[in-house]
Image (cartoon, rainbow, N blue to C red; front, side):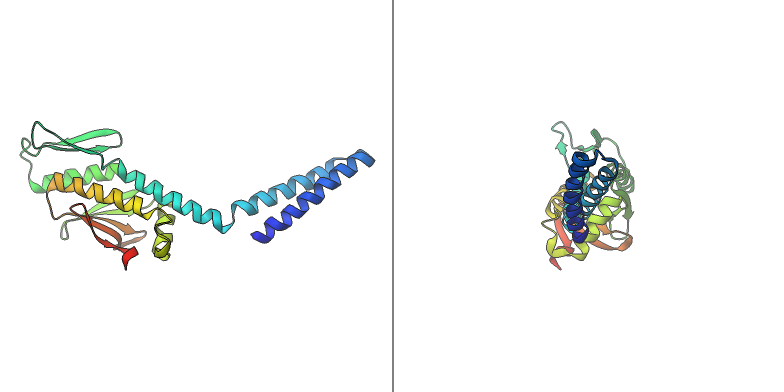
Length: 213
């Protein structure tokens, strides 16, 4: 792409001179203008497809993925009773543990539905009852690209905004503990691989991160 940018820039300069010269001497502008437009298009196309922009885009995508989870992690504790609440897509879902009389399984399924709503733009959420783990399966194209970049380049994770995502997951994990109790994990899974986690938090603390391996 760098060759296309250089070539396009040279043609752009030559086309500009050609247009000025043709107009001054022959009063013709159609062909030089076409050449000028094509040269400009080639230069712009080459510039936006340089590797630098792709790396920058990956960082923005991961940061965006982190913000998708942050709406879930803005929680407040009720002073009047033992109920827990967290924000989901701008609304507040309240689970009253004291008055509802729900079983532990009902609490787990309730929480699964809320997580599915909160992460719907990022992907899907499954619950593995054997390991007591809520698994975020990324399907959003931008999120998938960003996470794959981090999986392949863990040394570039911080530059790509990895800490923003993991902090959000830790906060969400803390709220999960308030809803269903301790011992439950939250994992961000590797795209297209439901057996491999990129990051896992339990009770608000990191238990696994691909960046530390």
